[in-house]
Amino acid sequence: MRRFEFPVDKHHAKAVNETLADVRRLQWSAALMAVVLAAAAVGLFFLGQPWAYILGAVLAICAVTSLWMVVWTPRKVGSIDQLYAKGDLVPALISEVHPRGYTLLALVDIAKPDAAAPRYALATRTIRALPGKGYTVGHKVPSVSVLGDRTNRGDSDTWQMVSMMPIAWGTWDSKVIAKATSQITETEWNLLRRNISMSEKVRASDNQYVLLDPAQLPDELH
Image (cartoon, rainbow, N blue to C red):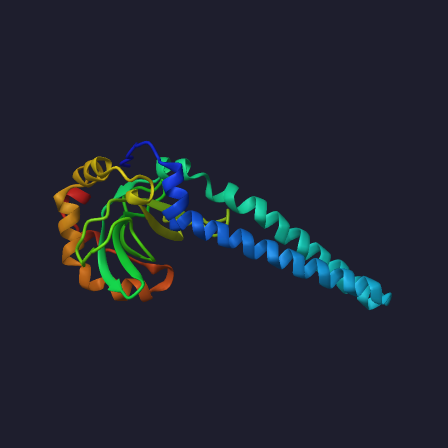
């Protein structure tokens, strides 16, 4: 477990952090769905037919569930400070440059805390932007891991959902980003560089990560 503490610039994060933007989009989608379902339920109730009452009640329950998602989603994800605080510092490189963004390739230990050993995986995330400009393939992007399960009943020793969040989405300070970069070993950076050609395969895989064979890992990562 390797944590990296730094003062998160909340105004900067709200402007550029795509994880927060994704949460906001989910909230807006859930709110819009709640309005549509509630309107449909009201329309059915006005019909005054037994079948319409039943269907309207079902839609009303769905509308309430959608409203609950508006409140539950940010609580489930956590605040931006919590996300940076609980994630591990991981190496990520720009592995692909697209007309409207980049793909990041990261080396992430996806083992749960009670697992017997680390389980390293290559993971990708396609992003729209990074602060600054002119980035090319191979550029170092120190990040924190964002890990989770789809349900509370996951019994695997590895996380189901794997992503990463650049430190640069949490601060403008180049010294902080440089410090994060230096705390990641050259062994990890080199392993990523050797696997940069795997980016497209990882991006196309289920959940956008591929487990690495422990036998092929450097001794430092065992």
